[in-house]
View 1 (cartoon, one colour):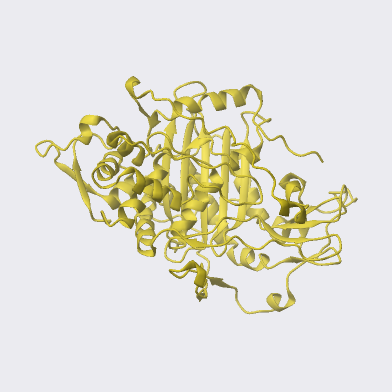
View 2 (view 1 turned 45 degrees about the vertical axis):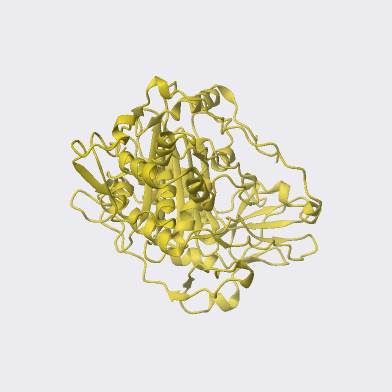
Length: 527
């Protein structure tokens, strides 16, 4: 099987790329004045590849990873021979994704077991296809070690657009998700806390130089930092940044969650740029989610994991195991962890993110009109972000990043949609559906993560774990203050029972997974 195309192509893709030059001037569907028509460095061009290092020869399988070449292998069964993905039996029953793992067989005998849960993967793709989203990406991480549970890219506007590029390139502006970085910088530098208030006048979504100037006679409304995160108040975030953060403080916080740094991964990830202006007012607008900051979906999930893990940064990984042709284990070591944010700051930002789903910009995807949660017993921490392009095809770039459960995180995630003006879903809706599916099959996901390839070609659960008592979750390890001293032992906690499904009130949609009904009304716009 040939490798998938590595760059965008086709007429639809030209529109897709052309729109990026304009979308940086729009936040929360707010048009930016012509005088703000600043030149931006393109974030859609992948950086020049670095020369291969000498040790690459020790990993001859690495450059041949291809999820499109992976096959579903039932637990306890052997993978089909290379070149025979159907197993040679056209009448064989369909493989159940719920009890299978994804395995790639290389022609030279290497076998690669992926960390992806097939049900979560299929669910994301079903949502994107059923709701006819032009471009979309979803990434879900297991925060115990940032193993990738879902890695779903989708394009219906141009079939030549490689779904992998949608997931790994910084093609979309970070928009209001960057408010999390600003909040982290304020808390890290002890310049504010969740109750810190800023007074203002005018609207909460537009942003002008006049609005950034304090005027006690005019500024009669005040909102807290916590409220600004939950409701995505641009003016509050901008004024707090203007008063308390210089360029270096904001850039340091951005780097702490993965911006402006290379992210180690089995597949190339484009570095997410964060161009922080020196001019105070322009910097304040960037801090609120305007301009100059772009991000990939895989990076969005990684950023969310830093807050979920209490300030601990660990690059994600997609490969669970590699066996060589001789049966030897060639699985690479997990990426190193490091503390990049103080635990108190990370936890405080996470608490603010809960307000997004309980009362803020994503509340209608997480609660019905009576205030009853769609996911019983689970609080979700999240942040929305939205930018709308000016030029054809005028796509709306819509984010939702977060983690769940908020009190004892198990997964971190990012969903990015590029919608047309007549959109059918927003990112927080798709994310909530994926979180629901995770909790419906959480125990199976945890158990199946222990599956391993065997020398006789099968995918097996360790007998000791198959017969063991209930699965337990390990909290993410927290490094000591001195990274050279290693990390503390992870705490072990018994998982609470899975939440009971809420009654069906959700736009008359069938439960996920399953075909998504067409012709339903879209969710109200959240901004």
